[in-house]
Amino acid sequence: MIKVEAEYTVNSSPGVLFSRLSTASGLAEWFADDVTIDKDGLYHFTWDGEEEVAKLLSKKNGEYVKFHWEHLDPSTYLEFRLKKDALTGDLALIITYFAEEDEVEERRLLWDNQIDELLHILGS
Image (tube, rainbow, N blue to C red):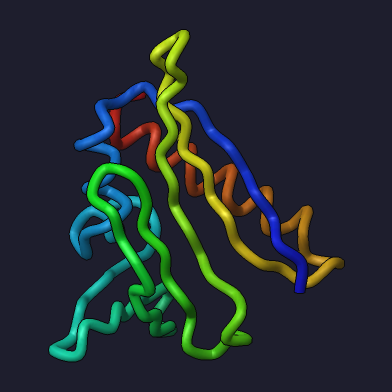
């Protein structure tokens, strides 16, 4: 698996965007069909009736949230990071994830579609 970073400019306030990246209800709006958090703090993501479980590794409000998918190598993760450009004031969403070398382009297209959905929901 290789580490991939994708950066998207988002026309939104950091607080509004961060809630879409870090809460079950926010993630269910654009990232998965449904998201729940169990009593152990595990995030259950559902797509087309299939469930994937992720552990929240770390989170800093307004800055980043990092998950690890239970079924993947322990050294891999999914991270959503916000970065505000000091000069322009633009807000960037930086997504770090891991993919097999032959799946990088397919995953990038999938992320582009997911972010299009997020931007639509944010009215951005």
